[in-house]
Picture 1 (cartoon, helix red, strand yellow):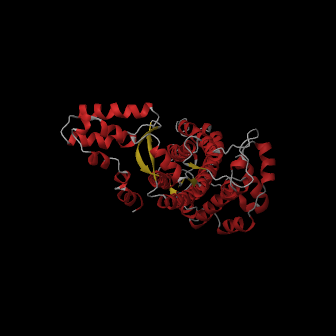
Picture 2 (picture 1 turned 90 degrees about the horizontal axis):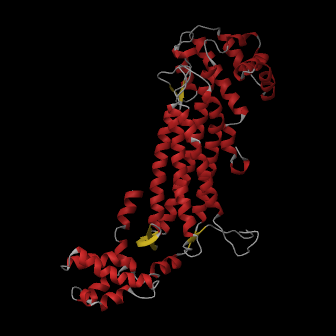
Picture 3 (picture 1 turned 180 degrees about the horizontal axis):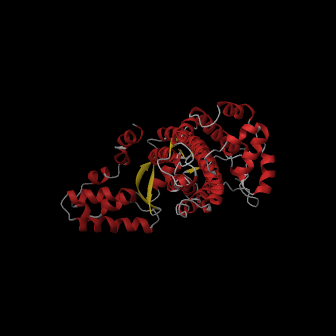
Length: 432
């Protein structure tokens, strides 16, 4: 976790104090369940809740000697509880604590990420409505294609992140499972009812069948979902970066008073936030492959996954949390230039209307091949003039075209509003 790209609420989930607090709750709830089942004295469970405490520094000190984090934790708790601490961890194995704790942390992290997505969706919807009918050029292969609206661009992003949200909700449900099943997962030394009790108290579902660990396909799907969300962040960030290029300049990141873009060139206003988001997205995606490789563990358990998850659990969630918040801020304050959008629409002499003329010629009786040839030969003149010539005027002066279409019919095919007639339909599909 790098402080520059971290937010306190998410980082606190991964703090040692939080992790050991969750461990304590798992152990104490398990003891409560055993007391209800008559396996341990009720007084022992009560004493653990009453006297149970720990110190991160002391746990680290003990672990340096015993080389086992869960044993170090239990030893430190026992120093506070006294003789009754002998009933802690009865029939349990370390993975029962570690895996259940990780499930709690990932579920809590998911809740924050879902809140992040909700805020982003709210901003995207507001800005999409604001620019619902702001015409701009649609591009394919980076080349002018046909008119769209800037609102449609943002509505597309809204729909994409709405899907991301649905995937994350499903991934949260899949990752939030509890396993208190003992060595190799057979419940030989612990009653399955203990697991059910702890799951309920920790807000988890029970793992239907575990080995000594919760199956890592669950974790792989979770981190893959984070990777997809990161890719969606990068897609929108890349769009903004292209729109901010000097020769395009249809939209740009907010440039605050006093902000400086370059140490050498005072005129620069760079898309630094969206470039940063592109880099952060790469990092989040980078955690997906290790999560996939964690699925294949030896037999009922090994710990090759453990070191990986100590990295990717905190780093992926913290980084994505920061990235979603940053993207929300970018969209919220994004500066949009409708006049520049219109200027770019008009820049290539009406080439963006070529398909409508093509279709009109076919409806007038020309073959598709001849229609394409007639429009393209005039369009290429406009292209080679860098928009200095007018496609409309060239078409009206072309005898083969004018033999099929009147000047009024040709002019009608250059109506910008024609391309926007179904915007309301698309918005209704996206926003309801």
